[in-house]
Length: 149
Image (cartoon, rainbow, N blue to C red; front, side, top):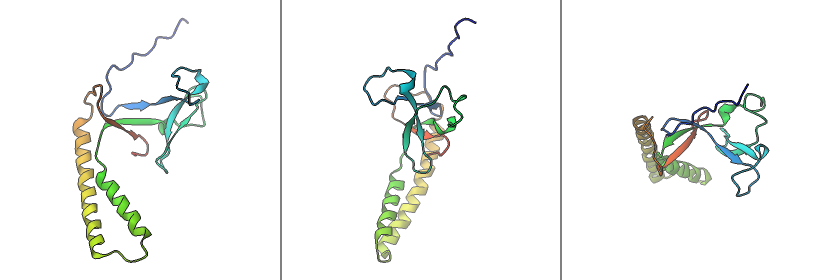
């Protein structure tokens, strides 16, 4: 056979599209490099952290890695302020040596209600925006496909 035909690249990204992020592993500012200097971004479901991993050959050939650990879904920016505030309050209460005050318990109840409302609004917003074409400058988030983080 002759040269392989390249698959056409999608001209426009949409909310809900899956992406695989390639990156340099040698920490240099150069975008070019040999294939051995390239890796892919992977997310850890337990810690929520990301790292870059060198893949030997292709994902089909590399039996040590599961491609699902490297796939992200494009979502437009959502709000997580209530989740963040609740997390901070839980940390503060866990460090305290005394029982929560009535004021702290009221704040906890309020934040829990805000989290439920925030999650409902985020789900509705994500559904409404799904498959909408993104334009240059759109603010997006990447949600790990497997862990939903």
